[in-house]
Image (cartoon, rainbow over all chains, first blue to last red; front, side, top):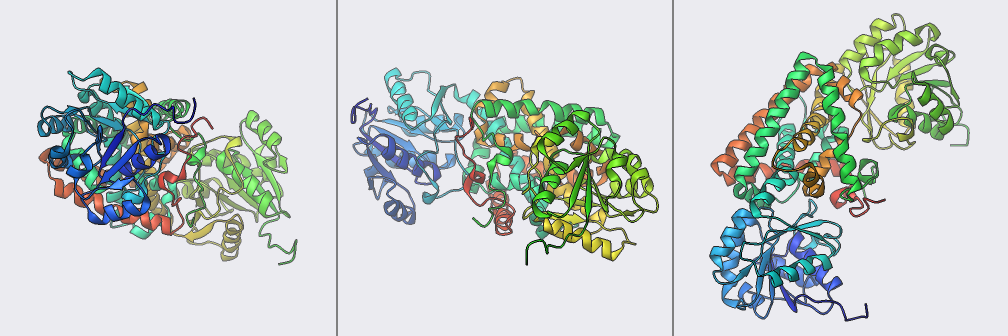
Length: 312
Length: 312
């Protein structure tokens, strides 16, 4: 393909919310879609200043209304509980033919909130399944979406041409795109993302509160497995509070399944049932292999982490 | 220090069990203690053949009795449930002044088993808190113990000079050494290692069994957090069965605390108590910081993993 012949599905993209996800989109669009203008906005003036310094967008606007003006794609990258207010704030600046999307981790609640906040506008929710434990405007990077899945949850009456452009947009940023309905998304993510975060937050909290083991011992001997959980338990608290409040039913359903399974293993330990423990511990290896074969994790032992580079 | 003036706390070291830990000790001793002879043994003839091919020791013996002959340090690197049998098998070859140690993840049960199996011999149990999810003779590497803690649990009547030599041995392999009593070790490791593995095995099992979400969806969207749990749930099933059978009381006690905390978070989600969720999710960040400051994890986002190197 000749230079500048690149498909640019949108001419101007507005990013509202300049944290890890919004900042990464800003970097990625500038890297992958050189003809596209990127406009950014964040409700926090300090974040806007930082975003200007980091060059997260070509222009950082001081209101979301002015940020939306002239854009044919507006992506909301705020915590899911803030989507409604963010959408209402930018609505006056929105072109009638602009597409509004988002990156929220729960989709049913967000789809309803955006449809209500932006009547008559085109809304297609999306969720790139990508991130790190970092947050804030300096946490983003251009390759965050590469080889990660982006799930788009189009409404029943979606404009097929707009959907196709949104798919192209995410593919250009390096993502693989899948579409499904919002309810199914919320069940899938409840198990692949929300329940793991809940469990990690819980166990890290449990370990902090013990009477017989000090917090400094927990830290010192964390390489036995515990440290793995502390990474996702360091994720943004506001984002995760909102996820659990907006995807409550699916999370509680998955949690119920987990608790039943944990109770069975507890019983096997209490009864000394080694056969049951061995069988359970054997069948979990296949999933890891599948994840590595699908290119969704690092194949090297210990995630390939520089095990001794804590000071790096 | 001049070459060859290195302190060699033992002249000949026997390693019984040539998996991840035993193999790593073999590599590490050869790398760090060039004057020391390393003898290896494994009950599995295929593992012995592989160990010879990989050079895990200077000599691989065909019986544990002959492997023990002439060594002043014998380290048992077998699953904790196999310690008793392994100790009895090597006893006839053991010198009266030899020190027997191990690398088992639970210490109370192992200390009792070794004391009973080897009456009149010097036994000082130990546990290097280091590992990866890999197992087998080709999983080991010389730097596994570098900057990791090794917990030694000396009996009340320990020979102080032998203890000092064992401390020097582990320090020479790069470990930092701490001593504590076996019961306290078992409580500490129940929370920093055993409970995390139990939780990880459980959630990976739960995700495999869902009716509404397929296993291929779980694999596909695992980057949302789930994949982190699959790493430790890919650990050796025999080793972990034995850990739970031998450290039952401490694991069940920690599991009880975890379940109580999880129930509280479940209730907060059900009631929509965002304040409680936010507060819980905020206080868990400090532990991650502590772990990184202590050099016990990689400070880079996402463990520094090559996020897109699944094909590596």
